[in-house]
Length: 126
Image (cartoon, rainbow, N blue to C red; front, side):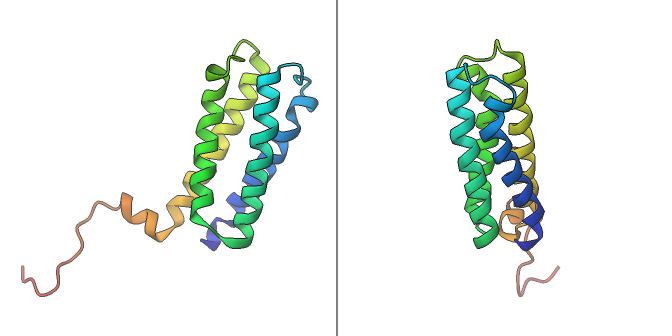
């Protein structure tokens, strides 16, 4: 999945942004959002870094799950009333999920799941 390297670096940058965003955007007083952003930001950055190094498909599935969680987290963790925090979580989550989906679509094994064509049967005449 070497073609997905740019997605990995973009996910790495998004993870770093997410990890520091509570202090940059000044919402570190919102404990649930700060813990969520710091923990998942570091996990995303580290996962993306090791994915670049090892080229693992499982890391893309992890990134997809993290992206979807970030979209839902403001509502499930109860910080949706903070509009800037919610917007940051949803924006980063959407981008991470889109990058992971893009990288997964380049993987041959995963692409087979989306390919609906029947494989040709050997020895079968039309």
